[in-house]
Structures are given as C-alpha cells and as structure tokens.
Image (cartoon, rainbow, N blue to C red; front, side, top):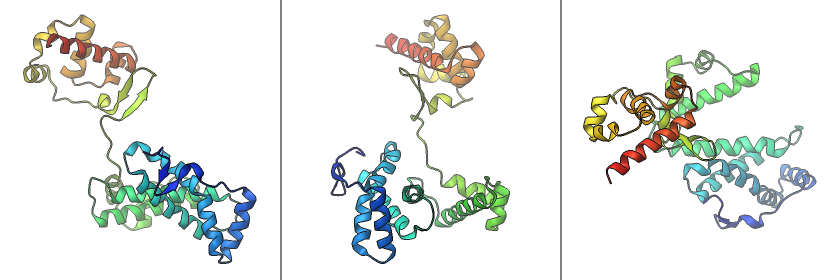
Length: 257
C-alpha cells in the first residue's frame, strides 16, 4: 500500500519539488515567521517523507498512518533546523522523520512494554547519541548506564524490550530462486528422531527417501541442527541445503497424497 498514488488525501504523483535556491529562500522566510513560506516548504518536502516511509513498507503498517507520523517528524525538523549550519536540510530532516516513525512503531508494538521501560529505553538511546557525538565512537553499555544513572543490566533489558518482533517467515537471503528464512536458522534440540517420527507419523515415509534426503532431514529435524550447521558439516552451501530439504519434504508429502 506504500506505492499507492493517494496517501492521506495527498496525490503523491503531483507533489511539488523545490530547487536548492527555493529551499534556502523559504527557510530564511520561515525563520522570520512567514507561515505561508512554512506551508510551502512543508509541501515541497513531502517527497522526502514518502521516500522515508518506503523503508518501512515491509512491516504491513498503514501507509496513511506512517505518512502522517513522518510529516510530524518533517515539521519538527523544519522548526529546529539551523540555517547557519553548512548542512543540507534533507541531511538533518531524514533522521528526524525516521526517529518519529520508529517511536510510533515502538509505542504501537503488538508486544506491550510498560511506559517506565520505554522511558528508560529512550533515555538510554539519547545518552548513546550524546556520547557518540562527544567521543566520535559508539559507547559501551557501561558508559550508557553511567550516563543515565542505572545498572547496565537495566539498560540491556529496556533496549531489548523495545526491539521490534521479527517473524520466523522473514527472508534473510535470496539467491534469485530460493529464499532462506529466519526459521531455517533456528535450532531445536527437542526435535529428536523419536519425537519427530512418532508425532508426525512419518517414519515410514522417511525410510523411502534417498540417502542424501535422509541425511538432510535427519540432521535438520532429528538432530535439530540449523541449515548453516548442516551446510558446514557436509560441505555445501546453505542454499543447497534449503533446496534439498524442500525437495525431501515435497517427496514425503507426495507419499501421503
């Protein structure tokens, strides 16, 4: 839905585009309190908001909601931008727009996190940004904890709590024909041969697989190894393991049709 032409009543195909000179002139007028220039500048930078929300298209969020939140970030960027700095407005505005959208996504996360934990997480993020600017390098957890005034364990816990949940079906690699998903990286030591075969009633079908298919299925589902572990063990790529695994599963399915 991110690619739809109209978002929040705005025809994205007809969004105005400002030249650098026009932007500079409008920014000067805005700083002098010109509301008409501010409105024109906002409209002239809606393409910037649109380009940012494209990055969040895979989350399944409403394009209209993301666009509105992105516009809030844009307006904050306009109100806080220092025209005396030798920095392009877009360079300053994009992080502001992204930050506003991320805050919205965190606050509306399907996994509810308490307000106190979220507040501490935001303080930790602000401290990390501050320390990074001061020292020109990423601070340690201990340094962030000292800056905020809490134990490092609390910092780790609150930052973990606001991370977005990830689907096991999310692809992490594609070679053009086959995709590897997060679930393919998950190891499950509970999937023993007896447990898998007895519960699914597939022991007979397993016996009818060829040796290579048995080897892949055995290591993946009986031994509970990840595709990467299997690939390293038998000396082939993970993509090849994925293809062989799917082929073996398809053979088992055909036996039960």
